[in-house]
Amino acid sequence: DSSTSRGLGDVYKRQTLMVSFDAVDSAMKNRIFDYLNGVSYIIGATVSKVSENLLMYAPNHVEVDKEAVKKSTRSWLGR
Image (cartoon, rainbow, N blue to C red; front, side, top):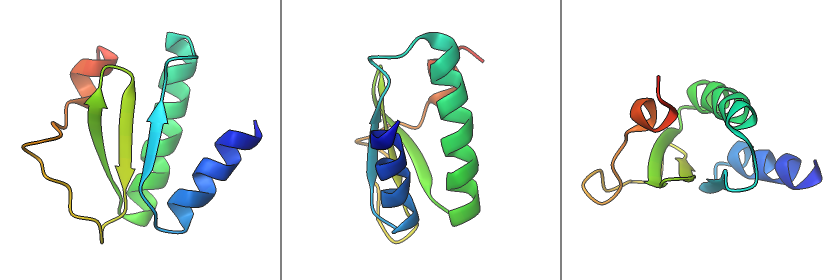
C-alpha cells in the first residue's frame, strides 16, 4: 500500500516513524514488524513500544528516552 511505502521512505531518510497496527490482524502485524525490524537493523535504528499497537522507529541520531518509552517488543508480540 502506498502509505506503507511512504512510511518506509521516512525511515530511509533517517526520520522517526510511528507505526500503528490497529487496522491489521496478528499475522500481518508480525510480518510488518519483522520487515521493519530488519530495515531498522540495517540502518541502525531503534524500535520502541509506545502503546499496545503503536511502535516508534527512530534513527540512531535521535535520542529516545528509554524510561518514557519502554522497549518490550518480545512480550508485545507474544514471542
